[in-house]
Length: 258
Image 1 (cartoon, rainbow, N blue to C red):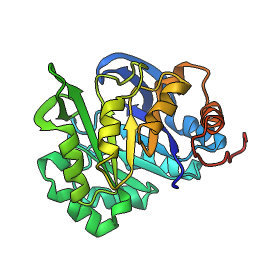
Image 2 (tube, rainbow, N blue to C red):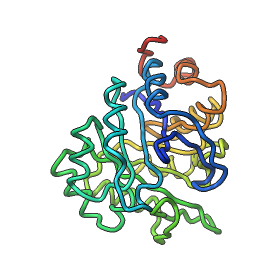
Image 3 (cartoon, one colour):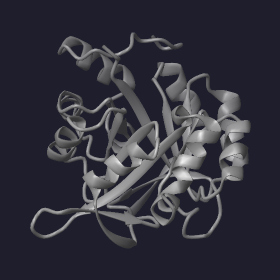
Image 4 (cartoon, helix red, strand yellow):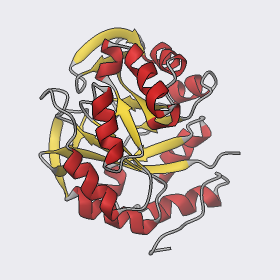
């Protein structure tokens, strides 16, 4: 059985680590991303997710300088995303140290881009990032460009299309739950986990240790955590210990704070 993964999520704006609610409300400063990454690395986390939240709207790619500085300081795999629209951009990010690249808006604009990227760099390097909102009546629809552009597409069906396009993983982010710390979208996680053959990363909603376990029990291969690490006393060590104690298969603690 594959071990479940714990992934801190970094949202970058203007070179700083920030946290929002529902993608655009109540911005809070959360520190320096490089120094914070070093702290998490010392805790022995499994991976990092780093996303420049303004890159797509500003028609640019997440800065390779930021990615390179983080790569120089940590010894864990990490995914970089934000404004990735070309094979050249993916190559540049991988060259400076990213292990995987997340593709969101560009995948919707051109689903073939994901396939071309997977063919060039390997499925394992390509993460299909899906942001969605729940509409009245319960439909869960994909949004792009930082949650500002509705597509009308069903989030679950889009995830399956991205699997068929040879994405190596699906990063599933609920805009409604982002920063709210009110639990993951367990219904969609469970429904997709039964249909996907590739790892599903559940993002947005962690507010308690029980929330983390619930998402993994529902079928997520990994969970991202942001607000809970930044604004509570729950550390990666606490999360890992709680999951192990409660029967979830996670990697053993490694790092300078083990």
